Image (cartoon, rainbow, N blue to C red; front, side):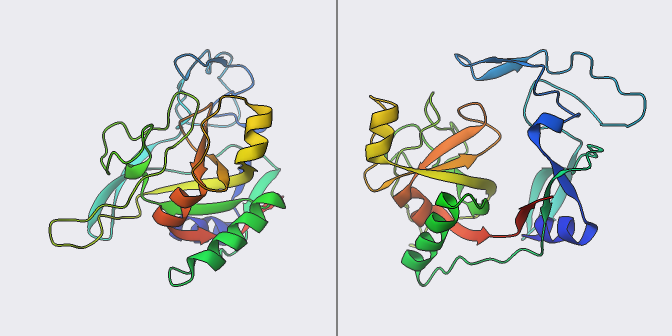
Amino acid sequence: MAIAQKASAAGYTFAYESQWQYNKSLGRVEHKATQTYTQSCDNYQDSRVNYGPCSDTTNQSDRYVTLVGGKLYVMRRLPNTGAGSGYRMESPTDFWNQSDLDQSMVILLLRSVLGHPTTITMDARYMKPRANTGPSMVNMNPDANGFVRTQNKKNLPNGQPDWELDHVMTVTGFISSSNLQKKVPGAPIADDFGYFIVKNCWGDAGYVYLPWTWVKTFTGQASTGILPQ
């Protein structure tokens, strides 16, 4: 939320992916078997704008360390893409209500099906390729096709929920389990209504698919404010 507020105050424009200069996504080669990229930096040099470092990952720009809530986090600075169009941030609004999760989920669903992106903050330690494996920073990934399995929230030794907000992603859509089976026969069926389609920096070419119950259980913030420039 703080980063979104800063971007809004600065009038920062998040370039459309086709305009990314710090990672030439249209020129790179995607290897789906290994979920990796090559040739991202071909013809990368630009004499007019300093776009910063380039690599074959989806994470670009300089790293820095910051203190948030008493914990040290490695972050990345917003790159200067030099783009004149893309997405801009209005002053964000957090509509997530922990005391009324059903209402929060309905708002998130409506925004998703109407094509309004929503940034959510959640506990990514529960993003696992197998169900009920518990939170950890190890193998914090979906399965090979980007699907996350439903997890149960665990408790700490003191009885408090083992839950923290440690990762931000953007919800871009929703697909019901029935429609998913029509489009991708054999895809794992969510144990509830379906999957939210979420833009991430790893997964199925940068997307992960989060079950309804997973989002309801592990999300703690949902922010509006992303608009086309």
